[in-house]
Length: 302
Image 1: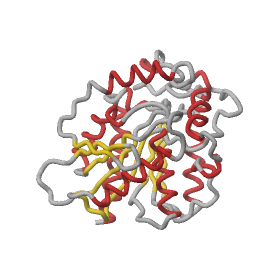
Image 2: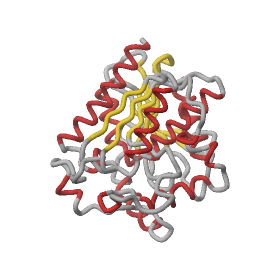
Image 3: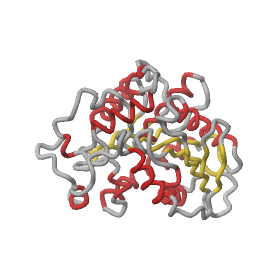
């Protein structure tokens, strides 16, 4: 962390007016209503919608150009396990699809607390299995990724497929992933007033809703003892993100376990900065980093 804990110059103006946290028992219904209204502004142009046997669904984006087969990215939206829907990331998925020439499968997973663990994990796991099976996908080049809780779910899927000895993705693309239920459990951080969009209070609520009665030791990736044999990872997180410390620690543990892991820490960036201020130069650079990591992983597996 910088000594002054200053916001990045590209982000500072908007950061001053953003909320510190979104989710809580009192605000959940209101935030869901508002987010749902914004998501419904997205049109289903060029989107294939499918249901999953588990109860979730997917939105599929295919590159243009008539390529016989293409790599695939299974993408998982954020929202602290309790908010959001796949439709909210349609613009991002279209950009990813066009930029890397991949089929993008965006997961509409079931939300907690109505559907606690393992509902969302089951949905995301089935979406990964679908990616290996659908027409037009090169099954040897499938990656999984997500933002915030979506990044945490991507990490959970990577752990599950390793344990079940199933086909591993060529990359875990983890944007400020939500990995550790212990973050914020003891109370506010010393720099709590610098967090935006997700703070300690939101984190306690989100994890509590998702875990239900499940033991965190078998759910939270940061709690897992054995990280050996996992798919290669790319982790990106802002310096002023609640998840900064847990993400840096997870990257370190992956490397110590022999897993190839790239880590990018963005100075002065708050949680989900790239999705809120998409056109900021620092956000565009963050997107470039992610697409570069995907291209390299797909090329290495070709």
